[in-house]
Structure formats: C-alpha cells, structure tokens
Image 1 (cartoon, rainbow, N blue to C red):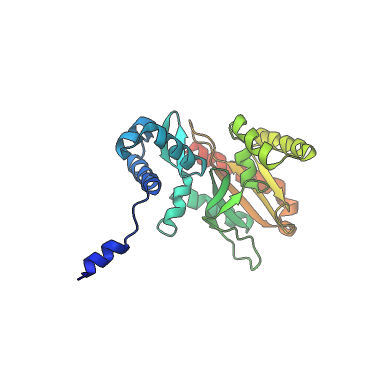
Image 2 (image 1 turned 135 degrees about the vertical axis):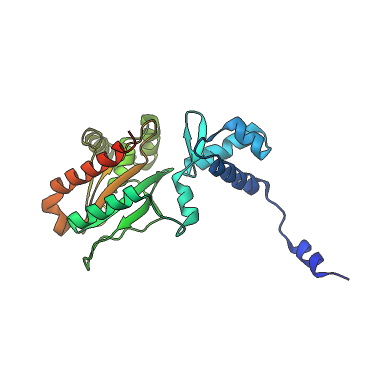
Length: 250
C-alpha cells in the first residue's frame, strides 16, 4: 500500500545540479557581504571543482547577479530583482530623488547596470497628470536611454567595444555613438532627447564610488515639451546631485 509520504517522495522532482550550484553560489556570496569571496572560496563552500564554478560565477557576473572586483565576487545589482517590494533604496538616494523631482516637477530615477541591462531601482514621480513613468526592477537596453549612455561611456573600454561591436554594427551609427560617449565622459552627463519615445526626454549623471566601476546613475525624465528649454539647467542640477552623492563615499 502506498502511503501519503511515499506519494510525495515519488512525485518530487530530482535535484538539478546546475540549478543547485547557482543558488548555492548566490547564497554564499550574499552571506559574505561586504567582504566578498574569491573563486577558491566559492568552490570550497559549494563543494564543486573550480573549473565548474568559474563558468557559473562568470555567468552570474555577466547578468548582474554578481559583481567581480579585484578577484573577488560580491552581490550584484540584479539581486534586487529577486526581492522586489521587500525594501527600498537608502535614505540619501531617496532624498536626492525627492529633491530632483520637486525641483523640476518631473520624474527622478536611480538606475543601476546589471550585465548589459539597465535596471531602475527607484523613482519619484511628480504630481503632473502626464509624466514619465519608467518601470522599476525591469531590465532595459543600455542604448539609447540616458542612464544606459552613462554606463556605456564609463565602461571598461574592451567591454564597451565588445558590446558596441555586437549591438551597433553600422559604421556611421558607431561614429555617432562614439562621439556622444566621449562627450558623456567629458561632461559627466548624458541626454536622451526623444530617442526612445519622441515625447520623452531624459538626462542622467554617474555616481562615483571609489575603487568600483560606475554602476549607478541618477537622472530626470519627463515630457520633452516641458524639458526642452530647460535641459542645460536640469543637466547641471542632476550632475551636482550625482557629485554630492559621490562625495558621500569619499
């Protein structure tokens, strides 16, 4: 006779080794914060060969779930998507977003780079009936959004070239993109003037954290009809806000 326990056991899915290892890697890296873990540490903690763990760790870094820095792995920005609704950005970021939104009566956003995608971590919207409302915790392409342009401009050159060679093969387009990214690096501000939606404009600036690649950007987006004549002023305001946040890290 089959018991209820037997029935549960017989229908239980077998453990998938790759899935188990990926989840174990996420768990041990999250638990290791803020120190991070070396590849050898990951292999020891998960109980798997370094050769197997190396590919999984690189894959998690490429998709933004890990962040690799100086041979150690840390929690990446995409992990935030696994806990949607369970938390919020820290108080300085929230305050900065509220100030920008109130100053310009437009939507202020905080974005991060996850692999080759942009994810909005938080936004503060104005009371305008018609306003920009970018989705939060969803992956979006880097180009041509203003935050994505920031991340591309300050990305490690070889990594940026690999992305652009794959995503933007037209020679004339590449010349234009390269020139625009050079201007973003020089001015620390990026613009999107109706390139994603003809009615919407955006401007963003990088937040600098010493010793780390740039993976945070703060910005303002809204109707082009309201922002067009104020873009220089808005850009200065966004850049000053980003610099202030950067300064909080020393």
